[in-house]
Image 1 (cartoon, rainbow over the protein chains, first blue to last red):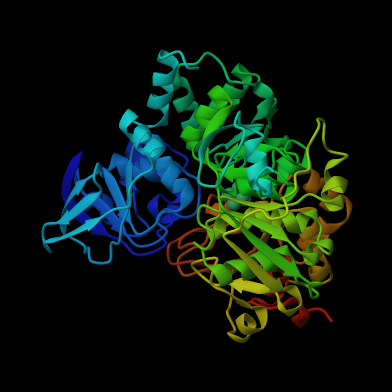
Image 2: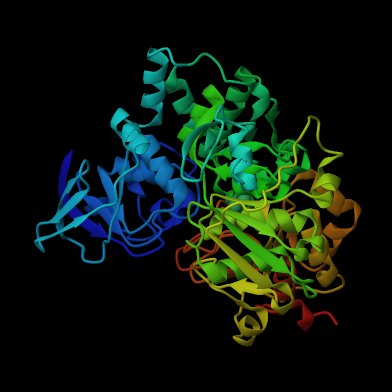
Length: 165
Length: 425
Ligand code: SF4
């Protein structure tokens, strides 16, 4: 699939407390999570982001807690893909499980406000402002099956239907 | 001859139908225990019902522990706890704990013998890796994973590569498991073990008990690790034998098993550590931290990292007969009801209260900035917890320094970050 959108750029070690602070975890509704998404990293993020925009970051994005509220908050904002140099493990797994695309790539040349065209099948990331192309690391086959199925729950339902469970 | 395997590979292999296994494989593994808490279980419960199965795979192999916001801090968190309670009732979840029986999950489950050596445990909480201290494979996952595991009793896992971490020598006075793990994270960084299993070994651990091992495994995730495991030994046996209500297996790594790297440290050169804001990798020697004259507003002793009875005893030793500094708050949170009771019987609660501290019932509370000790703007805390991310304990401009309970106690007395040697002779 091809996605096009504007970049919100963040640095290294953006932790789950920055993505969705624990003070809001007494309510797991999408509206609540969306409203406070990225609040402790950029207070105005949720008011500026629009459907289809990307979050781009440095190393170790999503480190910290296992809270699935973090990728859900990002997905609820309409962000289809997070691109970072590397991801913390639980965030990585949660994202695929809920159907949010995660791409690992060298994001150094990407800046806030750049416009990207991202092909999730080939991993090609075109920067339309800087006229550059970078490629993301390929996604393991099982992981893309998961995302393409719509996440782990949809995948489980499919398995039940096929009589495998 | 079969390929030599690490303890981690062996445990995972024995929870699959496969004949062999290699790190990097994505496998379906059977789980012995699936865990959720009052923050992660509500999402898991919603997802569970979305799958469309009639019941959970096994009500004995699920643990639901309300600990983050209980006794409930507000209406919304009460609703989340209610959702868990109703789910537990409906599906007869054996390991569901109501308030007075509940404690911080990762302190409670080992204490009650619910997780045992050789188990494969997944938990919708990042510090599920704590149980590696018992020689179990235990890893944190998300709520959707928990839903899937509650439905089917299995979960997809990537078999991790392992890093062997060897600590040799006897720890100095006041040096605990907390200091070793802070030191290690300082050396390898918060991403130093990303996706990998840390395997701890070496002569140092003959001198440290289960509480220290639990603290070390607990913070494996702060180096990005998937798990942090110890090979079980007599210390493990002594800890589990009176608690276990079912069989358990001691696994060991094979001679010749493959490691991505082997790290060697001399424990005798390591001093108590303090991790500066806002990452656990910012650890420095206590002497260096103390010399900076860093005033604190609050000291927290508790959590799944350092809220066990051994931690409270150390803190009480230092606080006995002393007062904490004026305008400084000391918050002590025994991690489980049993620990609370022991602390009471041993007179530790009196010591904390006489010193001017407050003692809370078991909860995560301030550790994740939930309640029971939230920091205002610009305030600074020293804490025996495991994370010091920006805003972790309150306002985004507040700061958290991580240390062992002895350092937290000494700092409360002096109102500044200080080592225990500065207050006791
Ligand atoms: S004590 Fe802190 S780290 Fe441990 S489970 Fe609770 S919130 Fe998480």
